Amino acid sequence: MKQAPINTSSELYNVVGVRFKRAGKIYYFDPNDLVLSLEQEVIVETARGLECGRVKIGPKKVSQEDITPPLKKVIRVATEKDKEQYLENQDKEVNAFQVCLEKIKQHQLEMKLIDVEYTFDRNKIIFYFTADGRVDFRELVKDLASIFRTRIELRQIGVRDEAKMLGGLGPCGRSMCCATFLGEFDPVSIKMAKEQNLSLNPAKISGICGRLMCCLKYESESYREINNELPGIGGTVQYQGKNAVVVEQNLLKETLILQLSNQERIEVPLGEVDY
Image 1 (cartoon, rainbow, N blue to C red):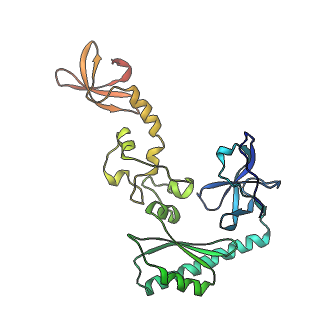
Image 2: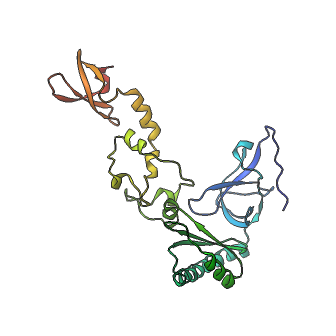
Image 3: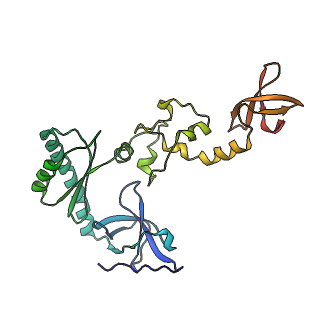
């Protein structure tokens, strides 16, 4: 399949954004002069062959910096036959999952099967799994290849990817962000929890995956900006003409808890102190 030309000029490229899985990453494709609309199912050319996806962005113009060359093409709008094949693949994935589970048990492998995915053209089956260490699955691959008569890939994933695939409810009671709208995982650090004055109890700031919750990043920049404007804990400020020490901050209320010279502690609005 001929690829769309890529050049180094300032030319803008016409693209559409296509997603293959719920909450999956959105990839740009050349619309190939097709008239496409949002939520339309399309067959696209990818590095691993033809795939069926759904239009989530565009058509729109982007610069070369926004695309990953070579820019692949949308082959066609999905036909009824394409849609039937996609549904058949999902049924096949259920069967392949059960077969693989039995083979894992037979080979006594210490691995947890998470998901199975057929490529649209059925040239490959991908088995996603987690494991604490390295797993010698060579015999397992041989068995699966002899059963399904196609290329087999076993792909080890991390706990965050596992949570994204399985879904569920987060500590907030809502469906997990990673399984509903987060296309990619951003780095999250304990510093973000500290900046928001959150309890550092792992049970309160960890998600289902056991890692720091992705939502800690959502307001991180806002808290950082507020922190830069507030006097630091332990700093000295002027309140009603007298020195006082900052012992606590309430970033959302924009108030400070001050310790006065008589050891009394009071909460005052930020606008009432000089620093």
